[in-house]
Image (cartoon, rainbow, N blue to C red; front, side):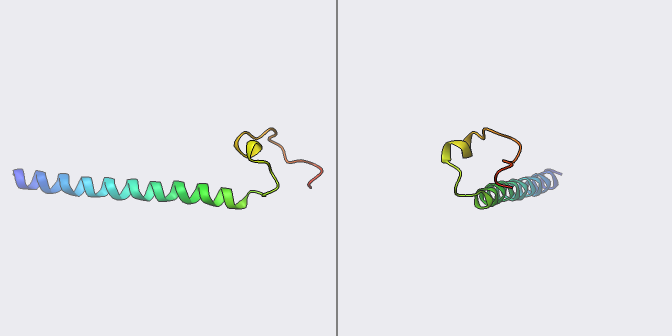
Length: 60
């Protein structure tokens, strides 16, 4: 009985680690992709704190 419990615990720990690794990869790739898609003409301060939510009508 203790070996089955230890095996299932080991399996659960493995799944949790795989899930956390996948979540980290997803978050970092999403952040990197959004940074790549931003225009480089925006000043860094406005990239951190966007001043407007709607797109600028002049740039359209």
